[in-house]
Length: 127
Image (tube, rainbow, N blue to C red):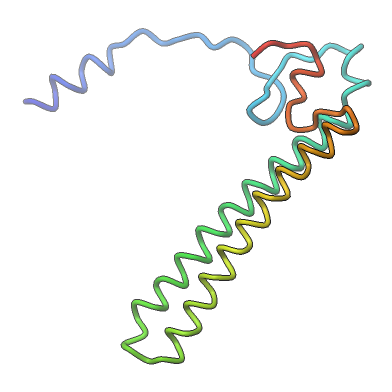
């Protein structure tokens, strides 16, 4: 009965029209043909960087969770605990490398005048 009072208003809500969504990543934009040729490389690089960052983050979560499970199921065996700790350390170092490389890409892009991490800005689109 209580759940019906909560779910029914949510279910009966009016749908929101988001309009057409084109592009990739969080900087989705409507691109016309004139600007598409100039920024095609930056959009490609942005998509690649975003994909690699997401895959690396998911790999960290999976690798870290597997190490934690190995630690929990080690039954006090010092070798397995040591392996799990090493695996967790390697996962954390991998995540740190991904985050630092993201900042390095931003700095290099800023020096070269190419904002690869924000291609919508190059297209003149205000988020």
